[in-house]
Amino acid sequence: MQTILLGIDIGTSACKVAFFGPDGDILAQRGEPYNVYYPKPGWAEQNPTEWWSSVCKAIKATISENNINVNDIAGIGIGGQSWSAIPLAGNGDVLCNTPIWMDTRAQDICDSLDEAIGEKTFFEICGNPLKPSYSLPKILWYKKYLPEVYEKTDKILQSNGYIAYMLTGKISMDLSQGYGFQNFNLRTGQFDFELSKEAGLRADIFPEVTSCHSIVGLVTKKAASETGLPEGIPVVAGGLDAALSTLGSGAIDDGETQEQGGQAGGMSIVTSSCLTNIKLITSYHVIPDRWLLQGGTVGGGGVLRWFVEQFGEYEKLNSKQNGLNVFSEITKLAEQIKPGSDGLIFLPYMSGERSPIWDPYAKGVYYGVDFSKTKGHFIRASLEGVAYSLKHNLETSEMSGATVKELRSVGGAANSLLWTQIKSDATGKPISVVEADTATTLGAAMLAGVAVGVYKDFEEATKRTVKIKRQHTPNPENTEIYNKAYNIYLEIYENLKSVMKKSSI
Image (tube, rainbow, N blue to C red; front, side, top):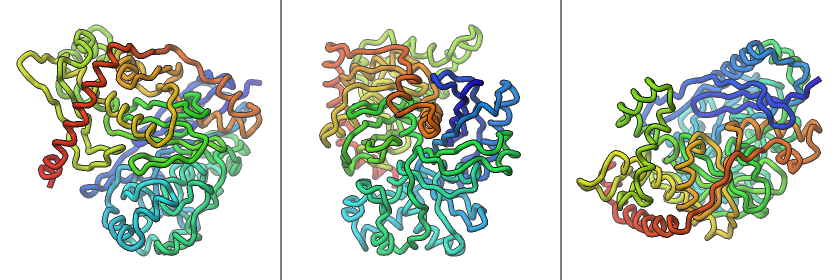
């Protein structure tokens, strides 16, 4: 008999399911897409029932195509995108689509809360800024604009909580997703019901908070018939995708940091105390007695993907003819350019920017263009600009008292040796690249493994499952070049931010 752990991840564009052995080896994995809806400017929403349909489809297909012995599955963990606000009726029906993390429709709610209560009051409780993309303003938006939904809502769930509910029939709210609510106390790990009342919300709309590796229920007969899983498998609460990815990268101790190179970029620093900075994001880690000081930027792998789509026709054709990876092809041009791109600097604010500037009006900028610049310059400057955004978040974190020892790199961008070395040089930090490109689902599976006793603790779980495939150390000469360019990068934004806002209105 082989022990199997199942990890599920509810991402923005698709769900992923992966079956792991106890040593972190991937037995099978699959993704299934679903829609993001943009009904109005500033709105971005998804239908949670489509998440569930995709999860069922992915699990069934993966089991049948890979001859998975479902009776060997010991536990299930679930990761999910942040800042959902899923209104669930008492009978289990989803009452409307949930605004997702990029939705900003509740700005007027935030303005009203700031005036009535004050952002400082919320920040002292939850340690995070009052922004419309968070969960609390979305619930108040329901109350104001969809009162029939608010009145019928029994509980508000997060993305992983909804999948756990569909698997077990049990309501749950994990600790790591609490940071999406400005009425959640980030030091006690509980909702502040006095502040909830002051904000105008019912206390009973919030589920009971549980640890991320708590078993919330067992797979029901109904869920078994829909997924192809057997009844009775333990399901843990799960957690925030970024926190699970941090666990899946092996970052569990103070100062260990996950660097995310997916569509967007970001970093999560493990801390043993609750450090906050209004320019950053603080959440609980998915492991006990740890927090994460996080920075999230819009500039990540999506920057290179955009460049390839708009300017990489030759590279796309060449890679197709030769069976090569188009991203490897296009970064070959960047390898020919010296660090610093001969003065070409890129601001990767391709859809506004999140931390640490929190500027929805920020724009992407190439500065230093002249007749000497080639396509290779623009590609390398793009890679360097994303590295500067990472450095900006790390510097802000260190000013808050965090200590960053090394970065654990995950995501598609980590596959680029050049880009990873640029990040190491620009930040001055060593970077270890995790072998498996499945950090989030692995983290979810590890939660389940600890819960059901496959691992005695999280230290054993990471030692057994997380493997490093390569390491990068900063080149001091390149770091000196990048430090000078980085200061110009910061100055460009400061000088242009008022113009960016004017051009957006």
